[in-house]
Amino acid sequence: MRLKLLVLLTLFFNLKSFAQQLQLSPSAEVSILTLGSGESLNDAFGHNAFRINDRTLGADIVFGYGEYDFEAPNFYLKFAQGKLNYLISKNGYNEFKNHYIRNNRTITEQVLNFSPEEKQKLLDYLVNNYKPENRRYLYDFFYDNCATRIRDVTATVSNNKIAFNLPKDFKPKTFRQLIHEHVGLNTWGSFGIDIALGSVIDIEASASQHMFLPKYITVFMGNAKVNGTDNIVKESSVIFEKKENKSSLNFILSPLVIVGLISIFILFITYKDYKKNVRSKWLDITLFLITGLTGILLLLLWFATDHTATGYNYNLLWAFPLNIFIISQLFKNTVKIWFKGYLKLLVIMLCLMTLHWFIGVQVFSIVLIPLIIAIAIRYSYIIKFFNKNNLT
Image 1 (cartoon, one colour):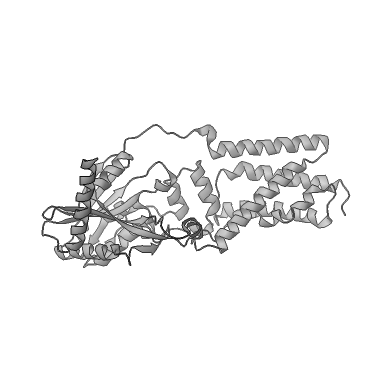
Image 2: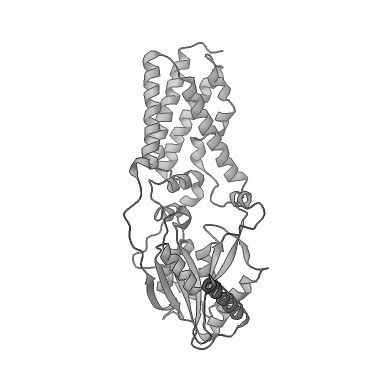
């Protein structure tokens, strides 16, 4: 216990001393650290940080952007609204490295080909950023995150313009495709992302915009030049290589299987209803309730938050918010004549969704395919059922 306390106190005073010591020695090195993907959705996209290593001063510190500010008032509400400020963090290098090794995350380092003046500018910039009045910034997953800050700060402190040259095998991708590189198509994380985020992420990302993902910081920095010929990175190394584990994904519990089974169940009930010429009201009410509530949530994400990626979300073509407000019609044995027209509108919107998918307006989750088929057949059956009954 005393040893642990001593280590913590030593680290504290080293950090304090480092913050006060603003003049790096000629032997100091600055580098970019890139952390590989972790197991959770929150860690799936990796992380970046700056390392300031000055053996002469005995200082080895890591600055990173994107730390949660759990002390912020109304943390969860602001997080949902896209109005949450994130923090720049500062840690001792060994503490930082050991944390990610324990979590089995690959660590790579790119030592920057900076002059002593540029190294000092980087340190001064980061120390100033770390001041209490400057630590917080409004986070944006695509345009202002832990990776884009590394790109922008590097360009800011460099005395020369950095040319981020394209790798030889570079193929432009949309933001959604870049996300899918880290989150598999048949995962709950990908399913949620593809429903929550709209068509704005189906545009092609520019070369610079690819660097919202930490791994592309490594790729583009490795190809970047200054003065037209000099590499911005003078040395690269892998500090720790992730130990590959057998996939823990249980296919049986994957979203495609679960949603597929639900879709089969909807089709089975619809087939039974067709054979008996009846309508299972509970199923229709459940479908309208779920699609309606989902649609309201998507509308709120679009119009009631500051998230840049939730706009123009055509998942609203299947998750239609009005369903929740006219659900009362489904409790009746006979319905208003306008309701049959409304059901036809729902089928048309499912067709429009398919069209949007084919022409590339928005890419939807593959998990939705069996569900959309089942919902379309169910809506068609309800229309046919009401055609056989008197309408008021």
